[in-house]
Image (cartoon, helix red, strand yellow):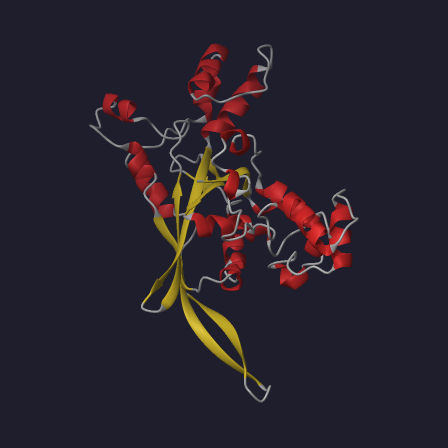
Length: 329
């Protein structure tokens, strides 16, 4: 349990400022839950091959297993067998994690709840059929693997500024994923944060998308008024967190963290609009209203950098241990 200190600034009628300090309690648990790992291993859910098992496999067995897992490989059929086995070993010794979040009000107080769970993957876990063949009965492996564990429970309002205050402590956990999980037989499992699961407002917060308005899709940032036209919605490219970060930092407002970085493109002056458009190769002629519309069409609903990159805009997703292909669902 760790305290969170907040500072509230109130403006009085006499234009004097008064600062009041509050302390909230935050319940936080490790992102990597060793007890859950032990439970999965104790139940025999994990297929953890030893190095000797990989050494005994033939090239045909490796290719067949990779095909069964629907994994793609750049290794040519004439590739060195050791390189192929190393690739296969990385696939079977990687675990993907998913975070779920919700921000709700209870008894007039806002609360933020985050849970974490492993994502079921046949590369790492046995299937229901394999468990039955091993004489362990009818086991729903996926439900056991993906059972969520409480990660963070905190007093927190719905504003962007309040939720951003918890990013640094979440980032510490991400950096801790570099510490690999070790099974009872000494096999190291690599954890990768891959998915975020939550309702619309939480997805928008994580991705840096605006809340409400004519945009708001955390996947493509497209115009919500045109979603009903399949030719438009299906042609919109998916925007990764890297794409969103690049779009924001392309101009001086994003790089300089204008408005504290929360809404760098809000209420831009005419000269600032011209600088933003010029940085993106857009037309810079016209009135303020015209340039606002031009920039809006370019940015869609993107209003800031993704939440996990808020304090480290110069770093990459890999450097803070976020999966390269992090997605929202």
